[in-house]
Image 1 (cartoon, rainbow, N blue to C red):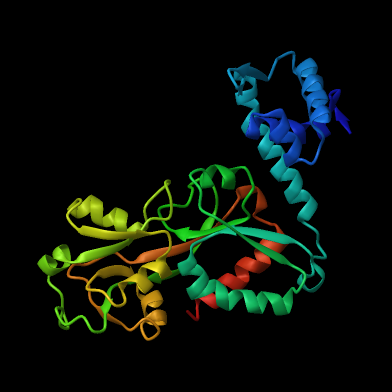
Image 2 (image 1 turned 60 degrees about the vertical axis):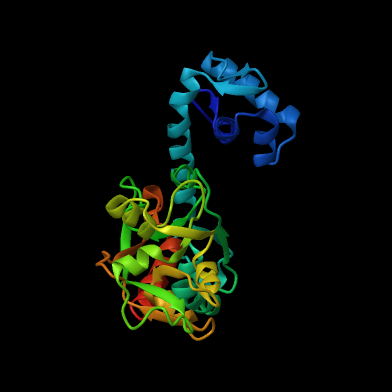
Length: 301
């Protein structure tokens, strides 16, 4: 299909090229041969009267025009996808849609492991893919590569709609046989203990860790850093260390890992867990259906 003499199929290729900044990687992204992608780039250069991508050393860099086109092209493709998926006769029972979401192991344990079985009953053909946290997860979301993000308030984007699923409180966990701590823990004890902390990747630290650092600075004795919340709970067991974690998560694993909970020696603001979707996918029937499952299950958490 052409519009103003532009083959609209080339927009898919241009989107891949601007994302990958490599002809070979862009070709793999859209399942083309490298020669076919090179031909597409040549046609777009001819249409826009611009090189679009230029060789700089061993890599390719977008021209100013290409940079200005990147987000508009991506927005157009997301809107086309939204139109294509917005069918009035959406039926979960007969859908083979794939829903890609970004979230943490904590959210899987507390909420999604309850939602997914219900979704499997209502929509056995729908596929779910959980994406890992990366340094550019916000860019991936903005580009439409993630359908949903289920993350704490404060890490959602102001440019896209979201809603709160539930609030979460915090607790400290220690090994049940740790006799150095009674029913309460003082702030001085808390500082002196060895801490197990969570870092989900180079892009950020978890909400509590960030809050503590801003308020008190780097005063804890951090002895173990792990990439997931459940791992932190496991590694407290059998030691004299402490972890500060989500209350619901601690309650789930306290018996399994022989843990004891004590209230933090200071007030921590509750955490709001939110689900976010792209502004152009607001009426996507599959996402509307799944968000409904998330909300109805969250009320029971």
